[in-house]
Image (cartoon, rainbow, N blue to C red; front, side, top):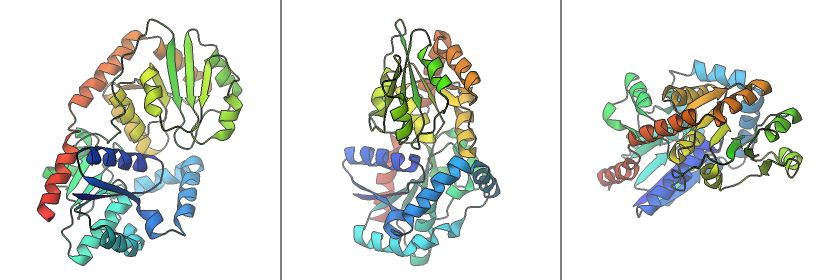
Length: 354
């Protein structure tokens, strides 16, 4: 079975979900190809689009949130129109049995293609945040894979057929597995700044981290090379790590993770049963992710202000009862998700098309 997975590099979450789906589907014996549809269809424009998006979420969060709110009930069916020519070429070349999309605009483009061509090509949309935002809802979608039951109910409330929505959790690589953590020795704190390397800038924050009794801190600096160079080898109890594809290794040895609550990062931590201390989010989809974590007892929130953030770290990393409770909440959440259904859904839809 040939499966085409469409994605875009607007943040790393969409791409990471696509890679995880490719891993699971390939392991199940299928041919799965991941394509950045924006890069494929708009090769001259895509780099600028991605650059401006990174600038917007880093410095223009107010405008991003305003757009998010204004389009909460607007599917934006026309937003993928400029991708249609490239999508048509891609589909002619690949001839997939199923298309899986991890980006709402990719889903919009495939939905429009199906409408214009009268195609029955199955489309599976994988929603990569804990959200029921209408940008993900498109008439040509045959199945939605969503983060949890609350998202499933939210989509149904917006008119989506309940039989087409499956609470699978956000797909993550099988490399993320529950780990046994010994809390009788020094504590391991993992700090992630996300794919853009967003981290506190003041030296006082890192000096205070370094001074935490019995705590070793690993900081994944992402693509922030300046921060890596500033921290590397400077502090006795802080290890700085540049961009890495081995996040699972650092999660497995950590007792607590401090991170912004991106959808993929949250579900990687859930898979690893790693308690989360989430930086107080500003972007709306990260607020929704954080609410989901806190409501299910899997995380606490830390203010971005340095002293408050450090206080939250101290209050959490030494609290064995709180850490255990978060691990158990992650176990319960994982048990309620139909993660194994991903391959079954794709295979069943392919059967209806072939």
